[in-house]
Image 1: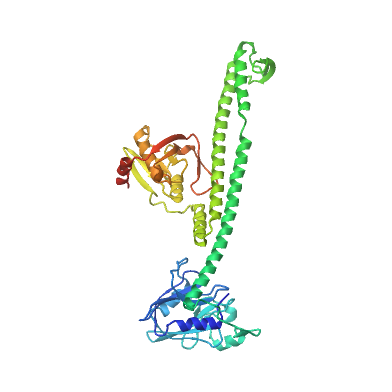
Image 2: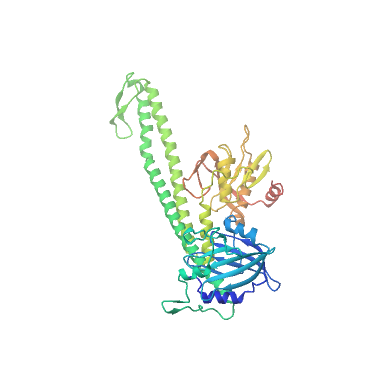
Length: 478
């Protein structure tokens, strides 16, 4: 609900704007102007909002973050009235229109603030009432540069009256202990926060649903690829049967029928490659067995890791949606959405993100945030580099850069492990289980949380925080 004319009148009566100088003009977003005003008694900022359903002006006590570059109209106002003095401020009787007259270097500029809910605007005119520019250019209303502006005609042509269908406008109830300006600022800040919270919650719930569906579909695909171990064992059994009857198999056979001593001597038919010897055919089945077994082991690891990721994600989502305090809830939503925001390809490549440490001849890189972790993974590490991460705590990724012909010594592994623990939520515990593997054994979760990877072929490392080792490393960080 926008301000009515009586509320605008009360707000203006509380502000001392005549003879105040306009120190700076800002435009934090596409619907707001802010004038930083100075008078000897009390400098303050005046906010003018043209948002639909929230058109208003009032003193501003809290900082507003700039979200957009300075726009055309604000640039014109800076060149025209910034540094000028407000000669007069007045409200057209019974109307939601405020008139500012500003003088700078002998030049007069008049601003008309039309605070109508569906057609708010700020129009700047010169002393002859020729429009210099408007916040919103509206040709149908002739609110464009060069046109003549007649506020009386504007009032006659559009209903913005003291009454509406016989209903008299009233100033909304507000605490007696504070100014109406402060009440309106707090009221609209609360409404905007609720609107932002509702919008972010909708985005968060959609992201949660999308991410859960992705992880569940990925799990389903992995399970479809997965072959039970007993099926894999059949490849080895066939190889064993062939090896036990090598001399009974005619050369260039396409198929052979032999007793299966694994299943009560029943006869089993085995397909053969006629270009291979009996022993080579047996070796082929052994190779298939080893290949399929490795595949099954890899799929088992991936399924377990993905199940863990899905479980962790569901728990994270439940904790996120359980936050009740509006401020904390909005902050948690923004942090969650930012964590899953995809990294742009054009992101700066000038400097290696995170921290760099030396351990003997080896270089250790540490990412402290999801964005740093992801950037290091994408651009600054290679397949033979080693990756370390705490198993049970969230934390930064630690990488040991590979040196050709050199094996990573235990001391370097302990250095990297201590850093992984230090830059994790487990640092207060003083100890943690880590897993480590080479980067080439990390699989990125498609559409997953920023920086999320699924390790395979990982090994375990138990780390107790070594203060002397950590102090040495931190004192030499780059």
